[in-house]
Image (cartoon, rainbow, N blue to C red; front, top):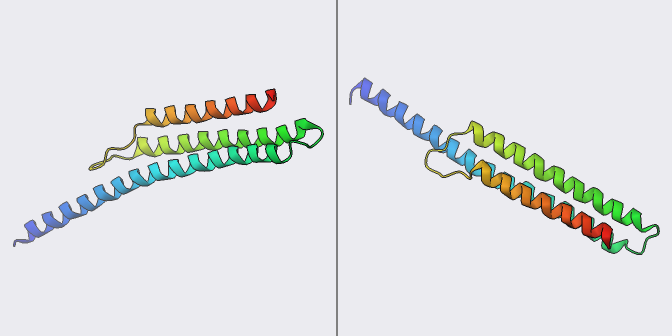
Length: 126
């Protein structure tokens, strides 16, 4: 094997490894987004739990306020997750994997935020 062929093979292998690394990063970004969305849901659930446990607290607005605070934290987590994931999607180029589209992430984020807002609304109505 000539030196030129060996050099070409090493370069091609290095490029393939880089492509695989980018694909792994794209997939890791999706897992991270999902993890942050779960964390946001947990924050909203924690707020609901506080409201349920402290429902008998007077004044009632105090328990509702703490629950609303956690719901607001949940919304901030959703927005931060979307922003971070979208940024990575824009920067990375997938090769062998089909990354989730930023539009799908925005739909998921909007639905979760809408759910949180509905939850907070019902919390204050009851």
